[in-house]
Length: 623
Image 1 (cartoon, rainbow, N blue to C red):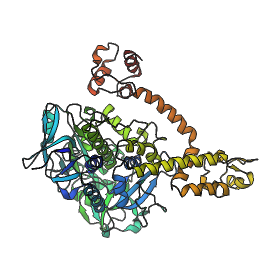
Image 2 (cartoon, one colour; image 1 turned 90 degrees about the vertical axis):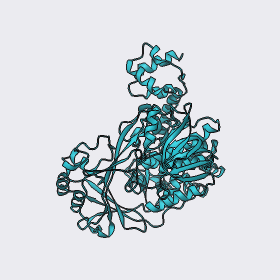
Image 3 (cartoon, one colour; image 1 turned 90 degrees about the horizontal axis):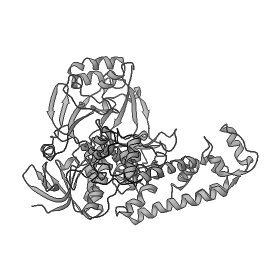
Image 4 (cartoon, rainbow, N blue to C red; image 1 turned 45 degrees about the horizontal axis):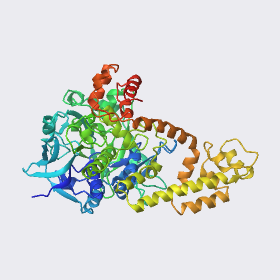
């Protein structure tokens, strides 16, 4: 009944939406298969996008032609730039979002592309011929054929929900689990595992007393995620902060004997960096309080997400403990928190394109690869969609290096190191985070996106204006002088050493605690130069300040990255038999044989492969 498609995307969460959007923008005919058309782009957990390192990923997705940044901006109810007290490598944008509007905007974006078709059904297996995927099987018994298939199943593969001592199948509250795909993949030779995640209760905001909580407002001058034409917020909703206390912890402990986390019901690994409340009070018993973020779910709903209170304890224990939190004394619960276990496939079974090594033209993206988080899922979907389209059209693969993007770090970590617990991105995972800032994702990535046909000429032109304007302003600032009379009052106020003669403006910018704004307030010449460039592109002035202030650090990282790139350029032959290299350690032989790294750079990052193993490989390859 359905035509043969270029690409079938299974699952319409964050990874699936980005995969379908990317491939369709590039010209592929795409079928998005979802079990429920009403839950496309559902925010299954917290109603927010971005945060530390995750915000950088959203900006990278946007710079590469993805949809997450645009949708986040259009559905935002609050914007904050985190870590502003630190250097720009740590600045991380975050939005609080309207959950229903987020899903509606994603669906609208996909429906605007005539290359995207939709099909509501459960995918129950794969059609494979001669180690190549040719389509999918569905629950109503209909085969659908395609050149490539991207699996983005989220938490639905044999999903099992835990609530106290109760267990029931499901991929999300009130939604059934997906069956059949895991069994097909195992039969094809894939290794599978189980992971766990959880979610907190949702409550009635009308029943809370916000006067007992700390208000957390958005930024005074909010920015946005997308480099495009989305509008910054003109009004915002506040979040609030409260805290647990010893009484909360004591009540929670009364349910530990019925907790699936402690009674052995859950055997899989949960996210280390987003533990449940029972895990927190067990692991950090010395702490008498934990932070609770009270997050509104949207403009037109009273539903509240209780961030920091993720739990799978019995619902009556959850409710009793919540009532002891300041502001929650009269709380009404809409639905309890729960934990969910699901199947995943260790990502060492993938190539850097996210195509599987075992089956050609089959791609995995999102939580099926062992990651956690909307942003991590979205960027994998984007890269899988791009690479499936490129391979179908016999074009070169699109792979980002670790010095080019957080997305490159994430995918390389997954493929080279694998993960035994839900993988979450942090700035500390990136060796070159001064290069991989949220402010320059468009400079780094939009020219690459344009070269493969996913970014438009207008988007490239906008980036080129930013690049050229920044270079022009840097040059002007290097020529402008500043006198002691102009700058010394500012230096006195900032407790910085005074100058005795005129110096170049750039020597003052590099000082700690001195901002470009301080200089523009006292240098008319610099102010005129900045204003002329700001009219060309609003981000030129801030980009100029960052590049001048951190010039030495940036140059040092670029040199280190160049060394890494040289190792990435040394290819390892596909047919190499590592067992024949007698000098390699036995662990290196085992890991290299399993992962089959494509380059020396990738081999060097595999756990268990030592520098001496890398030297042996280089000698073998004639380097």
